[in-house]
Length: 398
Image (cartoon, rainbow, N blue to C red; front, side, top):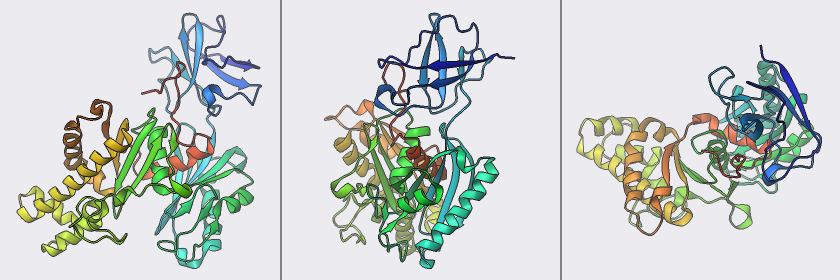
């Protein structure tokens, strides 16, 4: 059995995490790390509560990690501390609200989903969110006192800077609703708000397929097409704090009309709704039948799928040359089922690039699935704002 150690640090050098604990222990270490100087923020970021200790030249290196390290006794010289911080993650969509208990490793301890029923009003929704949150905490064996905050990802338009939801389009009656103020008051905790697409991108950066990357673009293909951009570890915002609408990148000016007012947007060609609509014109029931028939060699179905592939590849080309990201993460219901159809088209397009360092960009599938928004929302409460965890050398982990 490993002896439990307690390391108290009143001050630490800002140039990394190396600690002078040369004779603390031999062999695996199991310890609580307590910082007595709450103002210290390593490498300019928030103080992590999950620690990774590694023996290096008879000293110790300390680094916050977003995922667990190997168990002690596995042959590795590392041990992960066992006191992560805890938060609530809330994901608000037009038809469903999900609430989850999430720790600072990105692990979802438990979750619940309720119908949004936005037409019943914002006040009613808040009451039901609080009820769901309390049930989640009971299921997780946590209490409100264990939490460091509440994070919300919500279908837009939202103002993350003001904490306001203003979305009568998919959340009827939700006009200028200050959800941050309400949750802060009800839980007596810090509360945060993000656009749901940005929350999903943050989740993948925090504990998913883009973990350790600081320049990430995520595209989600489902009923519509959403997108989130993370640059230098933070959500990219445009004028008035708004996030980019990547689903409305122009692909074909002669393409189908889009509700945004343009023609041939990515969403109007490659979303599940667009594929289903094109399929119905060709005599197919829905998008699922389009993909099935395309796989069986039906030329009309194959043409619809190919058009969607080319649209996504063209969008990725624009994203590559605009943001030059380390990762382009693909997610959403269409990608969950057909990643192997879309990813090669995107990769082939990127491989043609000559004006940017294309070898620095990888295409990956979203790892967290429907939990991405929940994990990303909770990560706001951990103070990361999408920032990748950093290694003792100051370089992002991979």
